[in-house]
Structures are given as C-alpha cells and as structure tokens.
Length: 70
Image 1 (cartoon, rainbow, N blue to C red):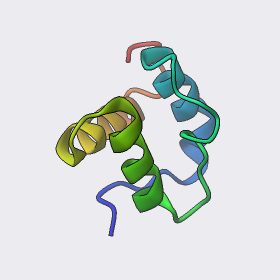
Image 2 (image 1 turned 45 degrees about the horizontal axis):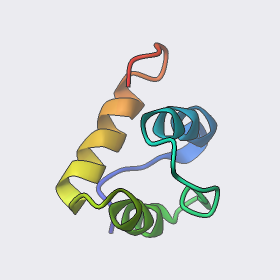
Image 3 (image 1 turned 180 degrees about the vertical axis):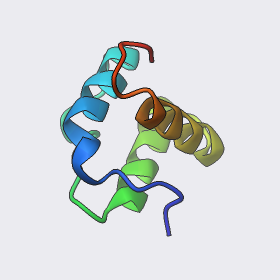
C-alpha cells in the first residue's frame, strides 16, 4: 500500500513533477485514482531514485500545492 493519497490533486501535482523532471513521458505520469503504488514504481524507474525519495518528493509537493515551489 502506498504511503501517500493523491485524490483530486493530481492535475496540479503532475505539473509540478513534470517541471522538476522534464524528461518524464505522459506514460510515466499516468495516474488512476487509487493506483498510487503503480505511480510510485513508474517514477522510481523513470527518475532512477529509490522509493523513499519518490514518496518524500510527492508528499512535499502535495503539502505545497498552493505555491510554485517544487
């Protein structure tokens, strides 16, 4: 089970992730509600970082949804 819950924030979060990692494809960023685990695994592979980093990055971005900080 994923440690994060994205829910309705995906559109904004996707923009932030895409800005940080410009080489990510739409396939890498594909997300369906409730499929956080699949998203984490794809991002781990695409950006070549471990699970801890990917989860930390997504949580940090979710906390700062109202500003432009990555």
